[in-house]
Image 1 (cartoon, protein in one colour):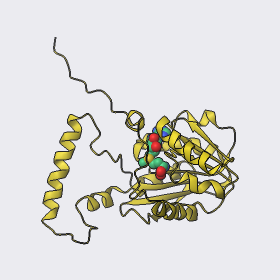
Image 2 (image 1 turned 90 degrees about the horizontal axis):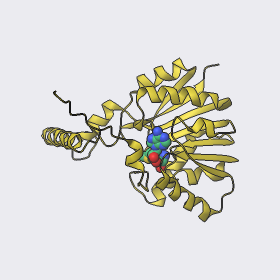
Image 3 (image 1 turned 120 degrees about the horizontal axis):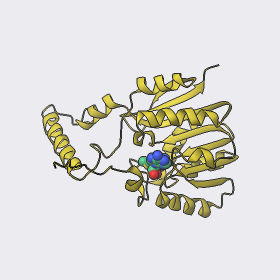
Length: 239
Ligand SMILES: C[S@@+](CC[C@H](N)C(=O)[O-])C[C@H]1O[C@@H](n2cnc3c(N)ncnc32)[C@H](O)[C@@H]1O
């Protein structure tokens, strides 16, 4: 009897299970403060905040003093442990951390929010997961609340960035070298049972806008300030 070789499923949860940093471009306090300030500008107020996929709290820790109540959640124990250390260091009393994923988080919440945000998280969602996330999040939003999805990977810009389009010393022959390296990486990823690109999935602004609209939101799309190939989706309820 013939057998089919079935590769086991790659799991992002497992991938993040021992990670301790969010993978920002620079991990200096100066850069993270600038990045958090950009996010706070777009969050544009509110009193209660859910930071879904808060990771090691590198941005969360900057949000806490600006809100009355903050919930940070993540499915990685090691990430949440790092976030907790930062919160204890600052002696903040208005923040809770919850170990949960995009399906289980909703049953853990006992309040609604003015803002629900996620930074560099929806790249680990499939489009179906993203739709469910927006649908569920809308049930936990206060009136005039917003869902703000930061730093979504734009597929077109990402490939331009990968071939060096945004670099100062961009040279056309580089395209071939980079494309070749990209192919080799994809083959290695396949052999290691990892996704084609370890950065996760890209979602076009068009797709996110359509999902948002289907769930009763209008989307404002804003260019990310610190990542050339990412954008932010600011969703507010259609009146
Ligand atoms: C790139 S890190 C960003 C962390 C944080 N938002 C920041 O900007 O510093 C992505 C985080 O999302 C979390 N994550 C990814 N998919 C998730 C899911 N389905 N449920 C819960 N957390 C998730 C990971 O564990 C990780 O901590």
